[in-house]
Image 1 (tube, rainbow, N blue to C red):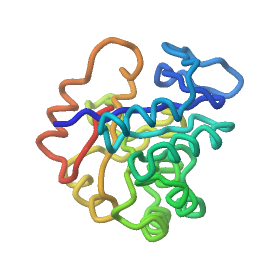
Image 2 (cartoon, rainbow, N blue to C red):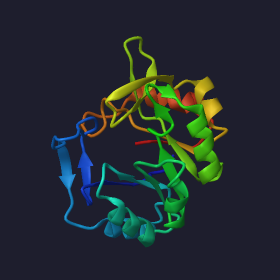
Image 3 (cartoon, helix red, strand yellow):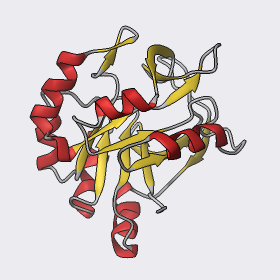
Image 4 (cartoon, rainbow, N blue to C red):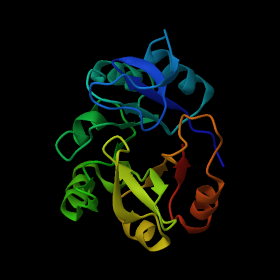
Length: 205
């Protein structure tokens, strides 16, 4: 097990936002709002040897801060937020070690196979991380959540589905969306399930 850091960007600043509170026209609930630039944290992670962390652009207005972080730690950080088949190469050229995608791959509550294949071709399997952040549904299945975690898909985070997706990406990134940022601990059941089933390196965030 390894520690992997994170830089969440909102309105161009480094913040830690409570998961699921990011909505259009509403101020999200924020646990931490840093006065320091993204490059400060990226350089610290580079200096301390923490590779494979993720930079997430939460909404518009974060491109400059994301680029500064990637420049400070080239190839050392993964970049997510609005990633699609058209811009994946751009972010890799700007220094992302890999790009992270959710909403482009999961739309209208379902896996979009064509989009998955297009994105894997554009980024390359070795530079694509799939964000499978999820929550339990009424039956107890963990299903992927998209659209700022406001919509649950019908895609279960199961051994068979993880094995299928592993053909297209190099890692998985997974948040327990019902707990993230709420300072109430981790989802031990989800962690145990991932430990038993994931075929790829997986970050529980």
